[in-house]
Structure formats: C-alpha cells, structure tokens
Image (tube, rainbow, N blue to C red; front, side):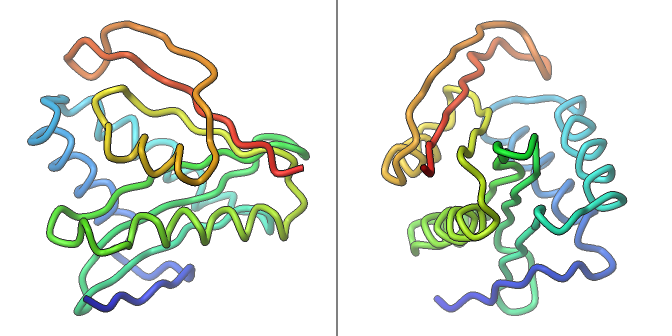
Length: 160
C-alpha cells in the first residue's frame, strides 16, 4: 500500500479528520458525538492560528484520507502530539509508525525538548506505537467522558 503525506491543508481536510474520528471512535470504542466536538473545536482553533512550530500531516491513499497526526506547540519547550488516527483499511501497513516518525523528526527540528500526548487506555495499538517510539506513560486519570468510562493516559517523550 502506498501513501502520500502532505501538510498543506486543502478544503475538506478538517471536516474529513473530524468525521473519521467521530465515526471510528463511536464504532470501535462507543464514544458519543461529544467526542467529535472535542476533536472539532481544538482542530479548528489550530487551523486558524497555526504557527511555524505547528504542523498537521494528512496521509492519503488513492486521494482519500488514510490518517492524520499533528504537532501543536504547548510551550517553547513542549509540543503536543494530537489527532493521530489511521483508517482501519490502512492499518498494519506501517502508516502509524511513519506518521509518528514524521512528527518526532519535525519536533526535533523545531527544537522542542519534549513531546507529550493524551490518549485513552482502550487504544492499545496506538499505545504500543507510542512506547515503541520511546514515549512513556506518566499519568492516568479515570473518569467518564464522551458517554463512556475511560482511563485517560498521558505519555511523554524527552527529545533532549
């Protein structure tokens, strides 16, 4: 399977990312529509204010969204990895690993000291990719979000 990666946004990209998150997370994890809003709000803010140390990658296969990932400046030293998702039809082909590698190379080039991310414990395959890239879990917060009980997890990777 071949994929094209780009970081220049085109009309429809933001909506496609939000839609794919909403549909997949509802189907795979039972999350409700509030999760889609949780993705949409910050993603819209990101697009409107995107700075030079931020980047959103779109992975395409045959002209369709296959995945996404972003690096968002959280501070001068810290970047947040966000909106990481691979379409189920494209999983198992190395795309997730490639997307994470792109974000880490970009983060190093931008001079960030750390990259962190928030996820939920149900996303075991993603957590495996994070750990393989050197991230370590540093925090857990159980609670009820997006219509289900979740354990939110924070992962951190020191780049220095």
